[in-house]
Structure formats: C-alpha cells, structure tokens
Amino acid sequence: MAKEPARVLVTGAAGQIGYALVPMIARGVLLGVDQPVILHMLDIPPAAEALNGVKMELIDAAFPLLKGVVATTDVVEACTGVNYAVMVGGFPRKEGMERKDVMTKNVSIYKSQASALEKHAAANCKVLVVANPANTNALILKEFAPSIPEKNITCLTRLDHNRALGQISERLNVQVSDVKNAIIWGNHSSSQYPDVNHATVGGKPVRELVADDKWLNGEFIKIVQQRGAAIIKARKLSSALSAASSACDHIRDWVLGTPEGTWVSMGVYSDGSYNVPAGLIYSFPVTCANGEWKIVQGLSIDEFSRKKLDLTAEELSEEKSLAYSCLS
Image (cartoon, rainbow, N blue to C red):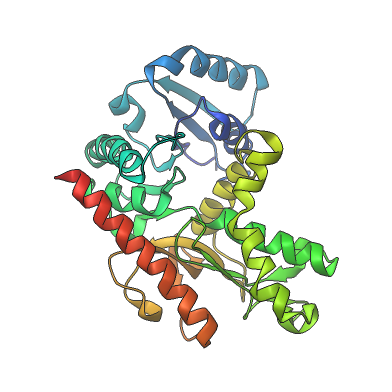
C-alpha cells in the first residue's frame, strides 16, 4: 500500500543550498525511494520570484514522489502540518559584522520560525538546523518551540563528518564507504574536533593505517575545520551541494536508522555525556533506530581529545550566553 505523503519544510529554499536540496528530497534521497513528499518551501519576500522559479522547475522535473509544492513567504503557511523541517535560511555574517550582530539577526529569525513550528507543525515534527551558527540557532529554536521534544531538534554536523571520511579515504586511497566511525565533536565551526581515534577501514584502525600521528593530529584536523572556507575561496560561493547531500544523510539515517556497528555525527541536545555541559546543542557520535538517535557511550577519550572537546564546548557556552543576551 502506498505511503501517505510526508510534508517537508525547507527554509531559505530559493538560496544555493535550498536549490541543491529540494530535488534531492523530491527524488527520495531524504526519506527513502518509497516515501512520497509534499515540499513546503519558505523564503523572504525579496526572494519570492526566485522561489516561484524553483517551484516551476520542480513541476517541470516531474518527480514521481513529489505530490505537491507549497512555495510561500508566509511562515505560518510554510510550517502548517510539516513532519520534517530543514532550516537552511538564516542571516549570513557579512564583512565588518560583529558576532553579536549576526547572532541578533538569527535569534529574531529563529524565534519567529520556532513559534510558527510550535503552533502549526505536525505532532512529533523532526527539525534539522543547517544555517549558521547552526548549534546555537537550534538552541534558540528549542527555546521558542517548547512543545517540540528536545530530542527532535538537531543541527547539521554530518557535513563535517562526511568531510572527515573524505579526507581519510583520499589519504588511504580507499572507497569512502569503507571508512567508518569518524566523529565530529562539538560546534559546527572551526573549533570542532574531527576525531579518528575510533575510526576504521575494513575493521582496521585508521590511526594504524595512516601511521602518521603528526598529520592526523594537525593538518587533517585543520583541513576538516577549514574546509568550508577553502570551498568559498575556490568557488567564490559557500558549500551547497555537499551541505544539501549531508542534510539528506542526516535525516535519512535519523528516520531509517544507521547500519549495525556504524555511528554518525549529529548536533544534539547534550545530556552531560562525555562531561559536555548539559543544555548545549553539541555534536556527538550517535546511532539511530526507530526514528530516535542515541549517543554512543563508553568511548575512551585521551588527553589530546579531552582538551579539544572542552575547547569547543567553551565556544558553544559563549555562543549560548551571547544568544541569550540578544533575547533580553
């Protein structure tokens, strides 16, 4: 029997990431090739014409799974009845702007979108925040959508996770699908910690196979941390295709489950695991089953890693304070 269509919201849908993301959703990359979807696309009024153009292209592409398209600049219409929300829209940091200015703009955006999701989304709506500062935007959203369970509000660090897998696969000249269980700890920023201490290729430890601790503890970490900036330098535009693909990976694994013995990285609400302060949205290794994520427990953390985990937690605590000061 055919499944009922799922309603998927993409905010900032006329932007670069949105444009890359909506055809992936319509093809079944987000929720599986047997799940029909109705796309809800939201953007700001100045982008209304471009948004309508995206809608026309979706119709022209004749995707069999796509059962309807809502393209709107009205946040209530966009959020009504949605089962999944991919929050791509946000205010980017512009030259000369202080962090507080960016945070103030994003707090106000996420406050209004959270309120609309709170009142109008379907029960048990799952939310993924992509727009930066992703972890703290997710925290603000959680604050203003109290009826959405905290376990249903996450942020995207799968892009960083996939970047780490890509670097290891290139270094070892192996298929990226053979690299398992890298971890991104902390913030989706340059303070994040890409950790390969538990990663394997073909069951063998990555650290052993690479046999170069200097590279793994230095250049590798920097490459993953700075990858977004390197792409902007090369393309003169920020990551769009990879961000869209990672957003699909994040939700697909969350909904359909992670393969046995494999974990992925997700920005989730900290419960104090690994001595990370509770109440931050922090990237942890997680496994997913039956639509729920669970933090992988009991991994050994060496002294080098401990410092990195604490450093990124400190940055997130500062961001949280800054965001909350913008609320008052």
